[in-house]
Length: 256
Length: 256
Image (tube, rainbow over the protein chains, first blue to last red):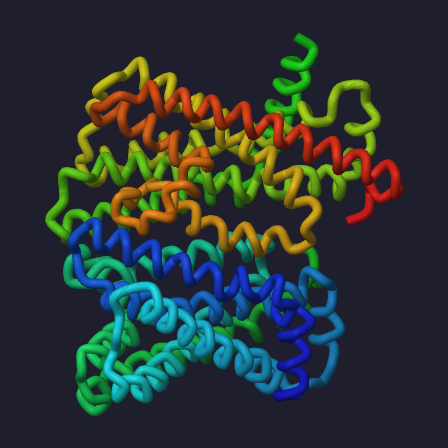
């Protein structure tokens, strides 16, 4: 249920295995996102390329995590497979986790591609020793954003505007999570919101590691990111169960 | 006169249709407002507060571009799904002018972006809205909408042949935002980007609007935008005639 179900869901619902969809959507978009913000950063005189490459490459894992999670749940509803799925006795935890695992792995790949884009086309050359801790940070961030996406996907059980929700969440992360604007330059309330979102702590940790810090000196940030992810995962699972129960009780699974 | 009536009727129909879509409206307003907010913070933090109107105008044209890209890419496909494509092709009015009306409507929706972005910047960031050439500004906006709308005609007639056009649209959004100088001056980009920018309407649209607003000579940019609009119309007509011929020969008009 966890592995086979998750993989089938990933392939069937996203078609992302098809290069004509995967390359432009999952790799092309973040590539131009990184290039755009790095050049905008040069023009604004705010920070160097490494600041923008690191922020956007870590957040690119979030793109995969949010959209993939939202559509994993939303498309089940759209294509009419959600009813039979929920009618089955399958463990909801296994279903949920199984769908999340390929998305986390995909996030890691997308983020790695983003760093390669920065290295190949921009002024970004991190020390080799920073790569293993960077991979760990991105992995934790991919988990946290996938969990956040699952929460948004659960809301998709009650609304049809999932594309709008995911677009909004993704673009707001650019602003609130310190991806392109240093968190300390934002108003206090925006910093507070950013502290509660995934990506924020991972971006900060990744920037320190790229600057030469050891993983031991950023472990608090990594743990905070993992904790936020765990919180969103629990909330997502809880919300999913609540909406499932409500949908059964009121027979509204495919009507709202 | 008959041609103009067809274009206007289709433009008005699609504009009303799109204005009923929460997704299109919010995307047309929220995405450019968010981008302008990020740019405002970046320019402020980077010590370039004088460029705020520059950023607001660039974000507004991005909104027109984004609406055109996502709206026009699917213009023919939506008629196909709605079952009205056959009726449009069978009617005595040239099909290309019906599609031009649809795609011009998607660009017109971008005017919401312009209003929202300038209002947002003025109210929250004290962006000064002093126009150097108000009359030419008033000319530059409809010319930009026209040129982008007819670029949308080219998209509509070519994307319909590509099953995964949505994925391509995702990638093109930020690629064109970068290479047309909407927010990043072309002088900062590698030299080989310039010829690509010259054949894209947003390059001249933003230059016309910016020169009219900030001071400069927008007439050449307006003329270039109009010239490109003419080229797009001819190209779109050729592509649509080809599409129509193939669909009639193969009986595939209603088939995706």
